Length: 528
Image 1 (cartoon, rainbow, N blue to C red):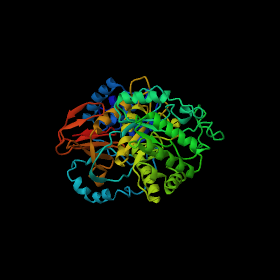
Image 2 (image 1 turned 180 degrees about the vertical axis):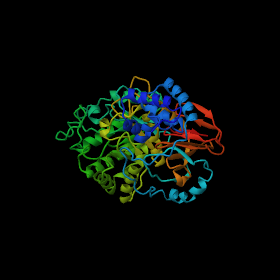
Image 3 (image 1 turned 120 degrees about the horizontal axis):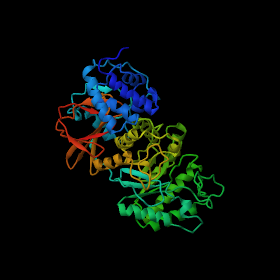
Image 4 (image 1 turned 90 degrees about the vertical axis):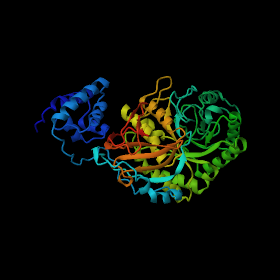
């Protein structure tokens, strides 16, 4: 096919970026959430993208810097003025497409929220009308419950990180709370011999968090070798065990010593990092007994502290769901203020919105046990270190959207795994170094959510939005604002009546015309 007039220079620039990156058309398409043939069409000059955002997506995947993007914009304007309108894309199969999501379902115990959804058409009646042009269609459909509810405060500790460091250093970007795990604070480290305690590293963390004004979650786990000598060793090098202690009196004594030593400096106690086999290989009945014992001690010594039940992971799999269900049926959650689950996509490269399916399965599991506890998301399971690194630009978007998805599903807190280390697919900040873009964006999200109340979340046509657009509505001191993004591709829509400002995750802001269509991408924006 011959190239339309004026497109050769833009195509040559894109093709050179592709060549220098070493990526195939399919790899670029996967990272930019475009079809392979779409990328080929633009790089070969067969057509010109209607939006520069598409050019920018491809260029950033290929490593383009600011100067290259400026030149590409000039070439795109030149080519776009000369080219014929781009034909509509033919449907293309998604790369690594996720299975079709199950029917939408709201958390059953939020009856009031379910009733309020009846009024959702009214709640969204003032949504922007100009939503008729989707620039880059999404490659997959993801369902989510739309809801409207009485405004509820976003927890001050909602934006959390798990500390993966033993130095006592804290994030240099704003967060709401920190969680101690992979921080050399396991039971084995704190009580290396029965009755001999070493609080050095724990105090280092508590001092650092105290100086930063951050609430601390202490996570139990890693029984000492002396307490479970026949237990299977954990992956850690400290000799800790995945088994419960042989004598639960040792467990009660440790919990009592820890809470007494902390003396109110620990806001929350999570009673085991992972209660799912093989990370806890004792009977579920024993885990429930340990939960009851620890909760009683904590409430006796520090009644203001939060008690968080043991976390469960691998909940994409029915077998692991049954373990959590059994814990619930045995009354484990009756001893806790919060339930903890590991909330993560099947693959780190999948859009965070795919976690909606996992939250649905978690809800169903708890519903089968006839309970509805308040939930915390406490990060990945141990398979996180086996995941491939996510491209930095995409990682920055995904980090923020992971928090937004959990907020959408009424989780009181979300702890990103992790802060301080770099053996994870999305790095926020390596201890001793500057934050990555993902870390800076998480810090900006923390600012957005400070003192905010959330009252509704909506996705797709049911909420009066394009198929790939997501948004949640908030108020702060009575003033409304919206956070809006796409799970894949882009869309164009007007900001909406009364909107005068757009805030971006890089900390910049700009005035907007509420009647002028703007591009919505996978990078969330705040509209006020």
